Image (tube, rainbow, N blue to C red; front, side, top):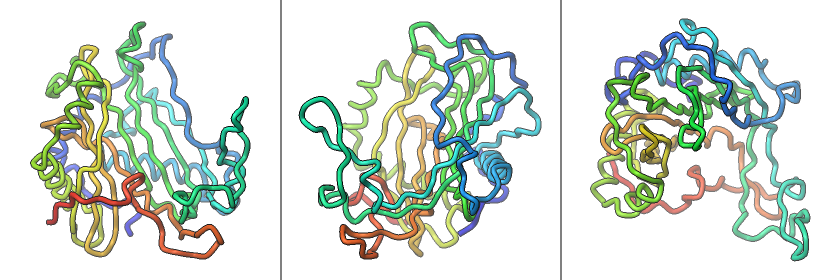
Length: 310
């Protein structure tokens, strides 16, 4: 697979609906800014086999530039936090899987007590994680409807190979920062979940087709796109104290590559997330430690029945 996947993605920005005007020179952040929870351990915990933190940082920034069009070289005042997640081997589950003791707390679960549905379990590689905070003129509101006064980007990089694992963009829906962006907000998260529950087969075809076009033109896969399926959704904060739909789409190539894309907006379908989770999986093991086929590349969606084929 490609490490950065794409070149010249800016030629298809119109398809993704990305507005580049949001990344003007930032102002000083307000004192009321609520900072994010960092993913991963402090970078000093990285293993000796990991690529250097600065190398991972640059790979992440370059990938964000290619996917979202943001030019960090023309920005000042942004902040990058780096974290490291070590490799995960389910044979060490007793340190992270717990059960309630029925009285007053949780106790570690031994491997032989882990439920059958947890097996086979994937063995994953270590990753670097980065979070970029880009200040803006917005002030978080005291009622909690606007949680941030900044735009956020996140990336994940395989700590051994430098391959891209995931990207996220939490875009501003502020009408001043993005005056040309169409608002498609709803009144509450409940309305969005009701909308998701009532999405039809045509919605699935619409989002799947859009995702396949995007994937082809972005060059995400080495091989040809085979199929796609809408696998769920949720909400993000929108304009004027409102909320906006996001939809996840799973895609697979003819050669078995997989990716999950996240789009924001019912109509504009702005791409705000990329997950190449399968790149983190080295292999899978069963309860007895035998090497078996990895579990579903699409988390919590082992059986997808609504595939739309190219």
